[in-house]
Amino acid sequence: MTGPSKALAWCIGLAVAAAAITLPLYANGYYLALGISILYFTVLATAWAMFSGPTRYVSLATAAFFGIGAYTAAVTGETLSWPLQLLTAAGVGAVVAAITGLSTLRLSGIYFIIFSFGLAELIRQLVIWYEVNIHKSVGRYLFSDITQEMLYWQLCALTALVFLAGFVLTRSRFGLALRAIGADETAARHSGIDATAVKLGVFIVSAVFMSVTGAIMAPRWTYIDPAIAFNPMISFQVVIMALLGGAGALIGPVLGVIPLVLLFEVLTAALPNHFSIVLGLIFIGIVLALPKGVVGLVDQVWRRERSKVTAVKPLSGGGTLLVAETVGKSFGGLRAVDKVSLDVRAGEILGVIGPNGSGKTTLLNMLSGALVPSDGTIRFDGAVINGMAAHRIARLGLARTFQLVRVMPDLTVAENVATAALFRGSRSSAAQESIHELLVMVGLGDMADSPAGDLTYIDQKRLELARALALHPRLVLLDEWLAGLNPTELETGIALIASLRARGITIVMVEHVMDAIRALCDRCVVMSAGVVIARGTPDEVLADPTVITAYLGEPDA
Ligand code: ADP
Ligand code: MG
Image (tube, rainbow, N blue to C red; front, side, top):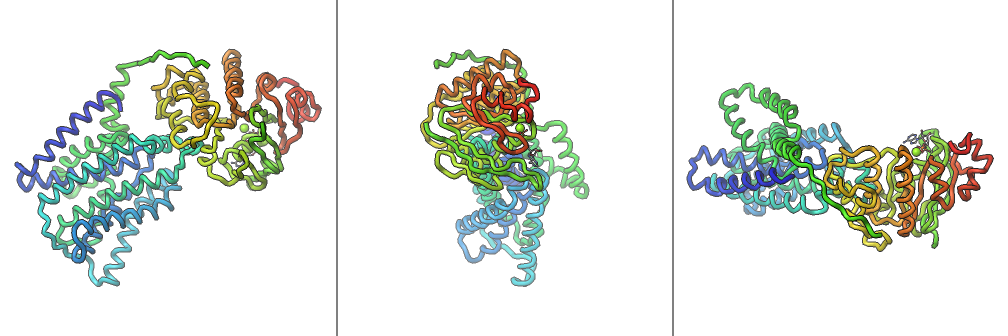
């Protein structure tokens, strides 16, 4: 969030908090009920945005967790004390979130949305089955001595908690990790982020808040059945509210909750039969007019006003590290890489060259953990890494760039680089620069605050390199990093790679630019049709007749 939306957020936050805390002192039953609606939707929408905002996994499971909480309170109402009921609701919500999260967070896009929606229905059906066949009733009566005012205070406390949790989360490394996952999950994994664990953890926290909200709200009904508890409309209302306010900022959802709760209140009174149609129209209107919500609108206006450029100061400035043994990869019938063995010595630059489609990228994908080899062994610094998750390999100090650049477009340039510093291991390495120094090194020193998506293609490539270096890597894999540079840029690029080696970083580079290969590489491996056809110094392999026939055609293609 930028300056003015932060200020706006604080003002609104303080005003709302003041109004909320004093409400029961002067409000009558009707306004208190309205206050309760605003508070419980605030908790639900803020908890929803905590997970769905940064990751963009649009969840329609709110009704499921809310219902779990409400129903748990109804079932345990006669046996447990009130605090224990809330704890039980939180526990059940967490367990269900963990189970469903593990199975669904591998899904993305529309599949996740559909599954999360189906979840509420599935749980509702299970509860109906249980009630009818085991408990022999359709619903349950709730006898509680909790007054409206007590309910209101509990929701106030829960609202404060959800904001506190959101505040801590956005400030922690998990907050940036989540946003990185939302922007580009693959790139995030290769920056050392365990995407599955981070998503699952935050999904559970968000579900716990929803379940506790349901439990707190349960006494509002004297009779509860699965249709009341698992009302799918809640899921949609929460999404609309969060989107209207802006799911990208902590304060965003509240900005949507207040007007929409008031509007829903008017609508249910004025148009009881057309409520869902109007809801749908509002939804479409919000998505079209305010794709990033109220907060996004304020930010956009602010960004137009300013263009900040910060002055920068320039930077002053073995053994075998990696072994691949008979590594192979098949895609169906295609043998993309076949029995490739190579060793990378600490401190050297190893070139991997060969015609298009010869398996170079596939090889790098296996070395970095993007692909699991079909056969063979890969050892990095003595440890077997084939089959190891990408983020763990990254944390060992093996970084990479992508042939088709992958930056996280909505994150700023500095944040992109910061993603790689979030979870890196604490190993010593020659390169220990700060994020700013890294940006200066790759020539992006004055772009730190720009969204990465605004950079030119070439600058995005530089950014990818800075991100790779922020892992404090011992080995960097570069996949055609110099491709597409003009002669001046090429010269700078070559000098930059040479400077990395001077800092003790080992490099494996896939490259078509032969001048760069000659200038930089100590040794080369030549691939063709998935196999290694030659090895040696650049001059040796580029003069080898087999290589010339297989690949070059003309010596300097
Ligand atoms: P290079 O980087 O040397 O140009 P690649 O490693 O990208 O080559 O590709 C090697 C071969 O493997 C090509 O024939 C390509 O079509 C195939 N290939 C690469 N990735 C996949 C994939 N995910 N699924 C199926 N085939 C693939
Ligand atoms: Mg390639």
